[in-house]
Image 1 (cartoon, one colour):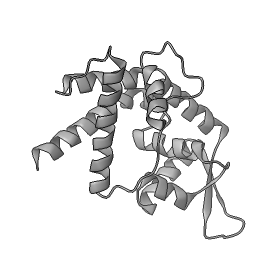
Image 2 (image 1 turned 180 degrees about the vertical axis):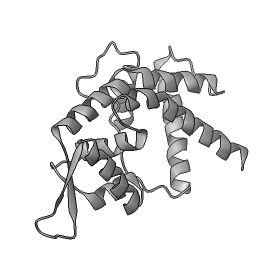
Image 3 (image 1 turned 30 degrees about the vertical axis):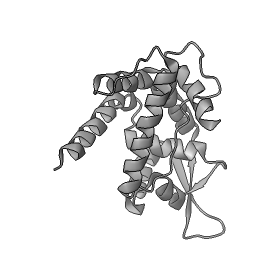
Image 4 (image 1 turned 45 degrees about the vertical axis):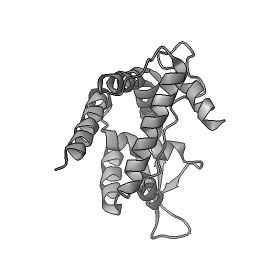
Length: 187
């Protein structure tokens, strides 16, 4: 295996390890979190099961197995589509809405994941002066651009995107500059 592939694999596992404990306390894994989040952000209440396959970039079998386990946990329900009985629609239960909201607060709003990423980038040979907001913003933008390029080159088709700065984001949060960075990128 190429050294760079091995390094990316190890970085991926390290990121998953950061969220494993808080997610496990809620009966979730990183993959279950992604699926619940995709259902949560869908504009309508119900999302077609096939839509989840496209959003997550995984196989139909994978989505089906994940949904079965989430149904057992009481976090989602699947119903047959009234217009096409071959299709199923997925909806969060009340418990599912509470669980994804709580998990999102724990992982994103708390700031610890963003702080871990910034610390890791500083420790991995990519040195930024994190006290210099402009330098930090440019560094993160370069890093995210490289990750997008890698995903594209390797044929990743997943389209799920996380909003790192919710509307009620605390301006005193350790990573509050990130919200300003998003505004900067959008301009």
